[in-house]
Image 1 (cartoon, rainbow, N blue to C red):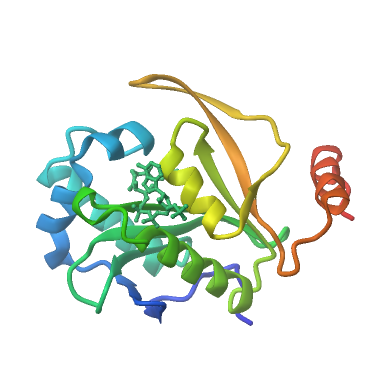
Image 2: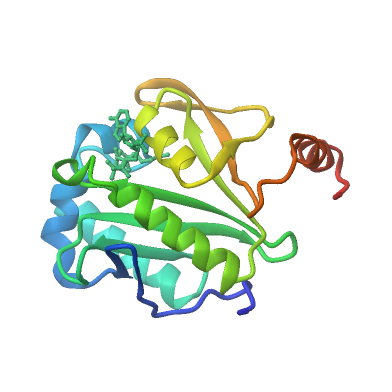
Length: 203
Ligand SMILES: CC(C)(COP(=O)(O)OP(=O)(O)OC[C@H]1O[C@@H](n2cnc3c(N)ncnc32)[C@H](O)[C@@H]1OP(=O)(O)O)[C@@H](O)C(=O)NCCC(=O)NCCS
């Protein structure tokens, strides 16, 4: 188990037909083509339009976050080559042993299970290698593709109140999803944990 205080860099994760690898400078054109897209603009905080300047800044920030060990930000590939999407882990709270994850897939590559496989692989790594016990996603209830990915990977809605945000598409409400522990945990345990988080006591 690694201390989650500083995240490992560089890493490559392989399993279930996907390879998650570090971003490279030569990915710029593919990155821009992937992120300059309406669903990415609608459901993620990416700038829109997403041009080459935005891409250069994005790769630079990604590298800084990786070298500094604050986040994991990996290109989703099939064989370590062409980037088809991205999966992230960020906002690590080492004390609570928790972190948030996120994902996106290029429009031409959706519907083939890439997001689900990438999220499952990174979630497994976060649990077993990083020792993070609470993994969460924040998803707008209207983003059915993303909620399907979450559900398929074993995440479940928590009872936490939605996080309200104002964006270019109007107000959005982000629900919190949590990876259910292996074995599931009873409904009562999950409710107790929601209560504990709200009122500051762990069970
Ligand atoms: C959400 C996203 C990453 C899904 O990527 P993907 O690789 O197509 O997802 P998968 O192929 O793994 O699909 C997983 C599940 O979602 C379902 N799904 C995928 N796209 C869907 C859509 N547009 N509407 C409804 N369900 C959808 C699949 O049918 C599958 O469900 P199943 O397990 O019941 O078969 C992709 O649509 C995307 O990049 N969207 C824009 C960015 C975004 O919303 N990111 C998440 C922010 S919280």
